[in-house]
Image (cartoon, rainbow, N blue to C red; front, side, top):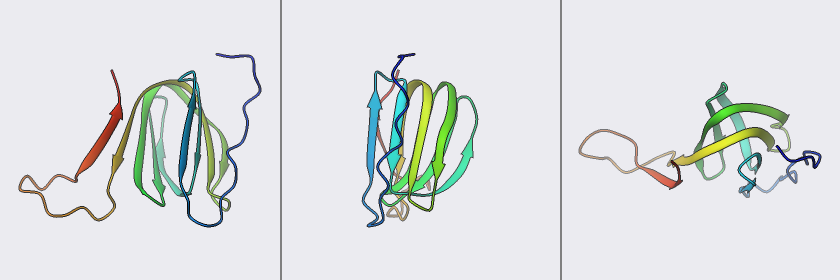
Length: 103
């Protein structure tokens, strides 16, 4: 990991959402209303833009301030997956999702 101190995501009160990944090791998320679950391989968050899944190795939550909507995670980020909160009905019954990157 980098030697830079982990910075808290900028608090948001207007429900805007940002996701920033630095060197795939320091992840800042704003617009978070709830942490659904987390372990060393997956962090699942409800954001103002849908459900966010962070997938990786050795993931740890270092900042958790849902009052301001700010979460900071460290570890090796392998993938990011968004699920729409209210997706249109799919023939398979699975929620619609969008993958940005992954291994």
